[in-house]
Picture 1 (cartoon, rainbow, N blue to C red):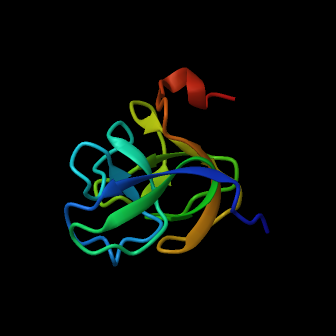
Picture 2: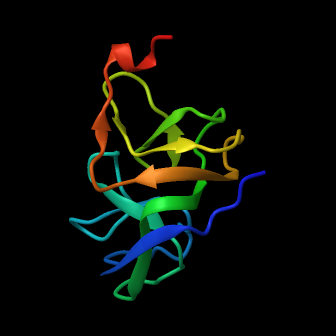
Length: 126
């Protein structure tokens, strides 16, 4: 099993209660749970309430909360709930799973939210 811990962080103010969203993606523009890979700025590491500081991992190896089954090595995106799912064509990818996880589980992945990739069909062939 791969373990997290090597990541770069930033801090923003939570503009909604995020205390039940640890290891989900957060958006920079509104300090709330992210709706997609394009607006996501990082993974929530702590459990802030509204108007408290939220610490986000934006680059490196971190834990994440899966919104569906994800196979080791697959590219990931962010679902509307801030959960991570396997990316397909037409999604912004923000990382790769370093282990296989089931829906709702905590996994470990390699992430880079500084430049999300827009995936096309050719990215998934082969």
